[in-house]
Image 1 (tube, helix red, strand yellow):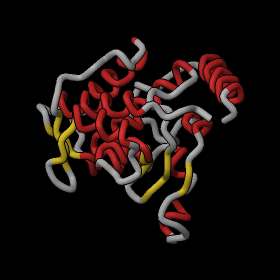
Image 2: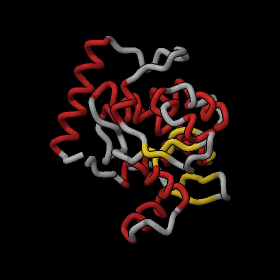
Image 3: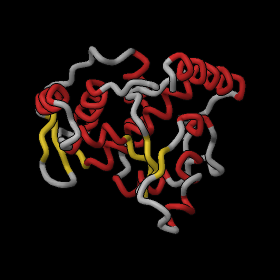
Image 4: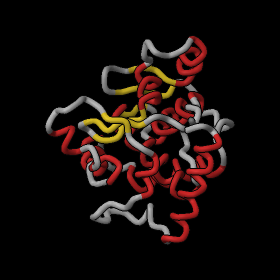
Length: 196
């Protein structure tokens, strides 16, 4: 399995807060991180955060990154200490940056994906981003189950991030069929090597 990188998750949350002037809505940040993971896996065959995603009523949620944003009880002592060095909870819905971001955990392409996604979608609020996420196949796959309340969350598959939505709403994810097949194959190979 891809191993979740808590330092990348915390720093991605931190970067998103800083881009918003220091404080950001948690749901907005999580949706932007999903979009960055979506972009990066399509271009390079791996997500940025290596998180586990769940389809929930407001769209895809990176589970462990959400725990970081909320300072969940599930965090290890090491994760909690690292998280608290960079993030402050404002209230139930918002958090703020507590320190300048540490870019060391990221590759150059990780940062390119984060910046490109913020440039494209950063002007949308959390509800518009949630609505946008409902257009994407990785969430739509679970739409009926969610609407019929067959469960509160459904684990998503990274393979579905390679599919295009029926309605095109941005050029950010554009790629040739050939490139998509190559990066999907890279993802499958990486996942197999890591026992995903």
